Amino acid sequence: MPIIRASDIGSYLYCRRAWRYRKDGVESENQAELAAGYALIGTHRDDLDVLFDGHDLRKFGSSGQQRSALLLLQLANLSVYHSQHQEYPLFLLDDIDAELDYKRIGGLLEFLQDKTQTFVTTSKESFVEKFGGGAVIFTIANNQTSKN
Image (cartoon, rainbow, N blue to C red; front, side):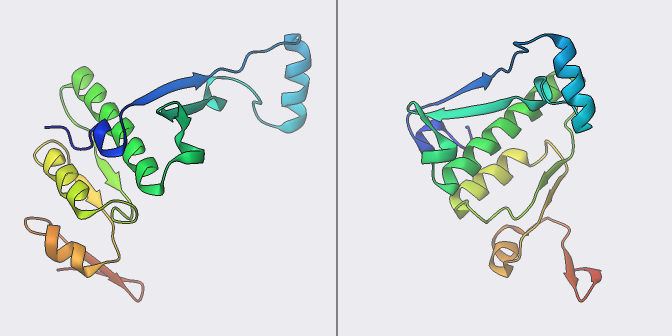
């Protein structure tokens, strides 16, 4: 059962890369990069456009839709890693309940269970009460960390 189906955020997601090509001579780009002190073009500078029903999620999607799309990409990345290495990487989720409802959070945590070691941060005690069963919980207060 998928955690975040495309139907949860709309009919479908479509991703495309916004490629940037060198249009001028390589020499002029190298000079500009030397002056800037970093690479100005290349695959590391590409944008990933995530479209929902033909609309850019960055502009037209809610924060929950944007977070869901990002999680879909991260879960796909986990699957690719697992298929190549036969193990799952560590999975980190900061402020998990910022834009997701508890239904999606529950599905996500259920999906990750027994697959990967997962670290989750939250500032809400209600989250810990609802989803903390079976987890090792640490509390950070006044610059001190304690294991509950």
